[in-house]
Amino acid sequence: SSDKAARARDIFDRMLESKFRPNPDLVTFNTVLNACAASNVNRVEAFQIAMDTFGILQRSEHLRPNEYTYGTLIKACATLLPQGHERVELVEQLYKGCCDNDCLSEPVVRILRSSLSEDDYVHILGGTY
Image (cartoon, rainbow, N blue to C red; front, side, top):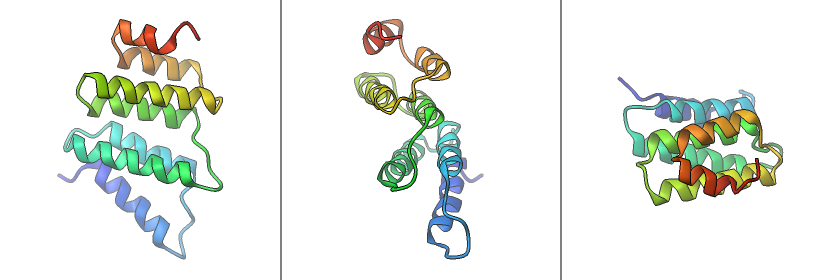
């Protein structure tokens, strides 16, 4: 069967290219990210799709990531990347972006907690929550 992440991104890309469909809104971006986080077929491809989609959102003139965007991306890191330094660094960058954009919420903290070891969680939060 075809992968959720690739199918979601295909629909997203067709929305971007079409003159007749509405432009993707924040729900559309977050839906693609969620499909990536739930992917179990090709984790490398799903992670790349998630990061590419987030990059498009960051460059948008009209849309900004919200708490669901950050929470879903952190969940994608936890499910798609192997445990290790790279994953922890990326989660830390996402956490900082989340804080910088005033998107930190209890659900984001819960996702952080479930995505990291106790030591990494304490290190990243640094007593801020």
